[in-house]
Length: 511
Image 1 (cartoon, rainbow, N blue to C red):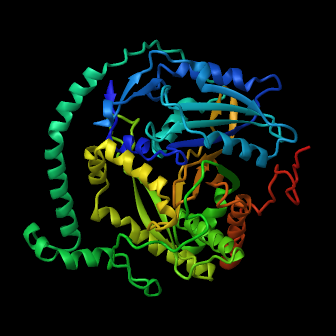
Image 2: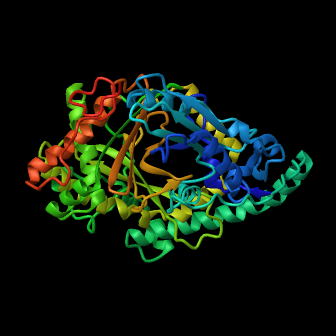
Image 3: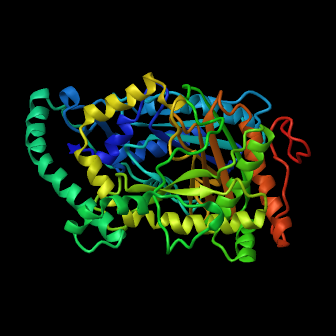
C-alpha cells in the first residue's frame, strides 16, 4: 500500500461531473499480416505486462471523510476483461469517425473501483490500419511517465517475443480503522511541513526580486510583489532577463473560456517534423518556438473568422516536466507549468515567431520565482476535502462564466522517440495525444513528435468549439504561411487530409 502524493491526488480532486482527470493517447498501427488480430494481440500483451507495470494493477482506496490523500493498493479483484475493449468503425472509417469515437470514450469519467486505465482496440479504419486508444488517469502518470509507459508496452524489434508474465497477488483492502490511524500520524506532521514550505517560498520570492534577507522582504513586500506580477506593455518586448512575471490578471475572453459540458470533440492532423526543423533553422529559434508560433497563428486566424479576436495577446499554460531521471518512483507526477503570452494581436508571421521566442524565454524563468518542487510540496499539505469542495463549488456556481483565469488555452509539446516502435509486430505510424480540458479552458492543444512526424491533437468542449476540425486544419495552414514568410524550402509539401470523409483533394479517400 502506497499513498498518493499531493500532486497525484490533485488530479482526482479536480474532477467534477464535467471535468475529468484522465489523459489519453491514440496510436495508429499498420497490420503486419492480413490475418493479424489486433484485439487478441493487445489482450495477450497487456495480460503479460500487468505484473510488470505497477500502474496497471493498482486501484484507489479513499481515506474516510477525505481527511488525507488516498492510497494505492494492488487490486485484489483485478479483471483484465474490464480494461481491454474492442470496437469498430462503420464504413467508410474516416478520421473524423475515429475522432468521434475518441470523443465519446474520453468524455466519460473513469470508475475508481478499478485500476484507472482502459485500452480500446479500434478497427475499421478506412486506410486499412487499426488504432489503439489508451485512457489513463493523470493521478497515475504524467506526460513524461506516459512516454516511458509507451516504451515499455512496445518494442523496437518487430520480431521481439511476448514478455513472460510476472506473477503478482492483490492486496487486502485496508479497513477504515487502519486508514484513520495512518491519517492521524500523517496529519500530525502537516503543520510543520506547511510552515517550512511557507518560509521557503518567501525566501525564493525575495531572492528572485533581489532582496537580501527575509526581514527586508517584509519591509519591501509591496514593491516586490508589484515587480513580480506587473505585466508591462507587450509592444515594448523587454528582455526576459530584465523582467520576469507571473501573470495574475484575467486573460482576454475567447469563445472557449466558459463553463464546459461533459461532451468533447477531438480533431487531429500531422505534418513532417523536418518541416518544423527547417522553419527553426530559417528563423534561428527552437522547435518549440515554432510549434508555439504555429498554434498562435492558427488561433489568431480562427478568432478572426469568428469576429472574436481580442486586442490583447492570448495566454497559454505550458506544462513543464521537472523530472531529473533520478526519481525512485517513475509512476508519479513530476510536472509544473509556466504561462506565456501568445502574440495573437500581431499580424506578421515572422514577428509572431520572434515574440513567441521572447515570451517562452521569459516564461521559463517563472520557475525561479516559485520552484516546481515547492508547488508539489504545497499540494502535499493541502487538505483533500477542501480541494474537492472548492472544485465542485466552482462548477456549481459557474464561476468560469463570471471570471476569466489568467490563461486561455493549454499548449503542450511532447517529444517522442525517433525510432520505430512495434506492438506485437505491428508498426506504429502515428501517436496522437488526446489531453483534457477544464472549466474556463475548454480547449487543449497537445503536440507529439514520433519518428519523422509531428502530430497535433486538439480536444475541446463540444459546444464551445463545434468546428474543431477547422481549427486543426488552420494549424497546417499556418505551417504553409510560415514557409511563405521565411522563404524556406519544404521538406514535405503540404497535403490534404488523407483519410477524412469529404476531405477535398484526398489521395486516399476512404471508400
